[in-house]
Image 1 (cartoon, rainbow, N blue to C red):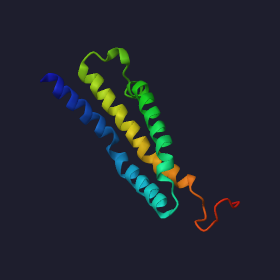
Image 2: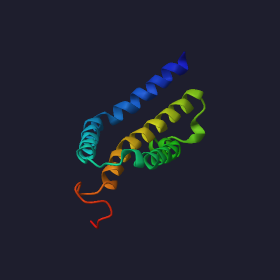
Image 3: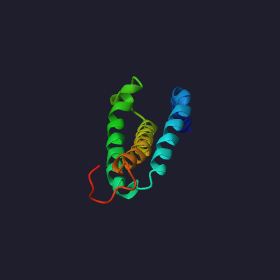
Image 4: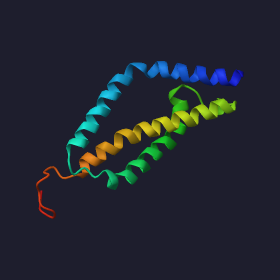
Length: 122
């Protein structure tokens, strides 16, 4: 039971550190989604694999960098709860990165002028 409370306390303390950023991050994400949805020719399906690969890469990098950012070390992780928290946080970082990268790539990949004929120079 101690490990569960320890894990919940770790998640709670980490959430308190990022609480002031959540409003700004949500506003930027809504703006990215609005920009991507306003483009009628946004290529959502074509940019999905690249976005997913980038999100997974960032999640893998987060496995290494999250302990460094919290002034900890991989060597200090003794409990299984620590490893579960690290994997969950790395997955959340990768998912958040994917949530930002996918609409950005879908917006950048589509042509600027929706009326341009296929194969015409922009």
